[in-house]
Image (cartoon, rainbow, N blue to C red; front, side, top):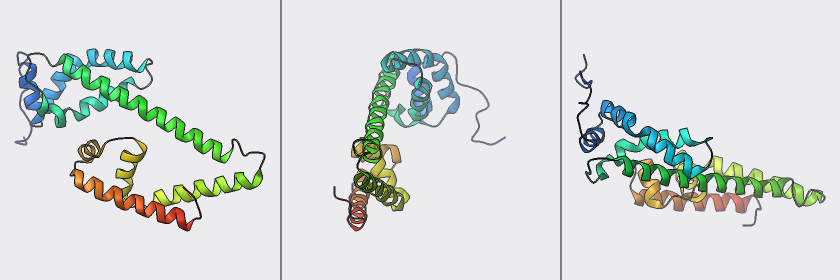
Length: 195
């Protein structure tokens, strides 16, 4: 048996603080115990925040997947229920903002391609060309620069949040974002797109 695998699960009598310390150390059995204890409460809080059940499972699972990274910040109270529900609600709010941003972006692209200018073939063609140049410029970025640009500029994350999400220093996020913006602007300028 591998020395990395536990031969027994966490004690049913372990406190949430003890379990979260184990989760922070990479103990998946402790993560499972925390999930079993609190997932239903987190699900309910996220459901109430989002107002519909369509994305609740995604947000709840995202929270528990991030738990090993955020567990060290737990303050040690006997029950982590409120703390977990708070994280779930914040992720749900972020998710809702991201969905709203995505819908507005799609609406703007729709206006450019098919909307206001549909009776003006010249403007519609220009909109299609601008969209193609933008998509091509974004696709031409390196994977690392594109990831930072998407998280900060399109998803609205702060530099620090993007750094945590990508497990890189915040200074690296700022550097990649600077270069991504510059490369996108150059590509848009070459494609004749005016900001």
